[in-house]
Length: 451
Image 1 (cartoon, rainbow, N blue to C red):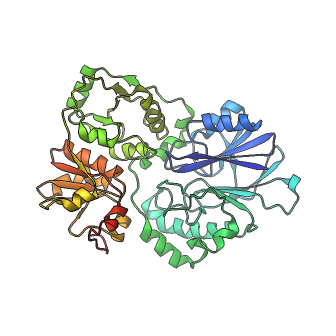
Image 2: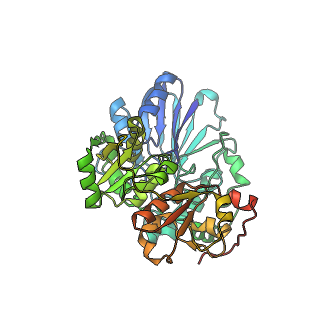
Image 3: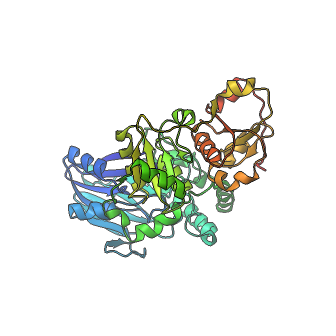
């Protein structure tokens, strides 16, 4: 039995392909299937079954499309209400995938009908622990959050998550643990492990809060620690219940200079995905800078109004393909694209500095911290105004008059926020530097609850 883990960093997740040398089960595949099918081809195995641990809230599943392409069974909880045919499975059932035995485990908590899959290979002997694919249930060092289904269900699901984690902990301690969430996804309740080393159930017994605290203590701590939910998550469940990810995305379309100008004047979201330093130095008026990275789709999907007109800009055509792919992974497709020419009027700009420049500045500024609440509470600049990046556009009118010095942990989110504020007519300075440099330069900070 071999497990091939496929990183999906733009979603903060992992997909898994487990096989016996001939037949494979794929767990929680993303919409784009190239890496999954290449892995199966390289391993010389046939995809015989595909499974989703739950109806996902953070991306479009490619499971049904993958299953249909390979004539494979698609396994999903029988109690899930979906608009397509699949093999509905229930806890306790045993599914044969080639020589592998797949035991379905009901593990509600992250969602109502969440399941995990414990896979063993009888060829290794009856005592072989195998591997468990836990989706958004027991993660490495944490669990999946329980507030994504409905606010009225959050506490009940948290209690269910505690019980599910303990059910999984009852497996052989040597069982390998393969979660889907927890590698940057906002579906994890807190930051989870991302080591290349595969965790085991036994390793979680001494470290995972769900296995160390009693139920009510765990629930209280879990609910107190939830961070914000990206706005596009609201749309993922409904889209996955109709298997929207099985279809090829609508292609992007080229947008000429005149049409681009019209889009800007209509108030379209025109997103410049060039390096944030290049954007600060010069960009088209009324555009938003979201540098392409593994976080690109998360922040575009979070900040841009859903189904709003969207155009992507860059000065290099090859840079557009990964951005288009990442947006399609969360259901944003058919976007406009425009390649900036040498004569593009990049007449708008704003200042950019580092923490050394911040320290040497004489003052007379408003500091805007666009990190999340937990980062703010762990340490902040005295007098800074806290506005998380996802709230910047809505709360810009609350910010004091004067020049706004915008920072985050690395400079990435601050670049987005600075572009939004600049688009709204504010004078900004982008502090593009790592937060660790603050202590290195002896810039004073304070701690405490967020205001």
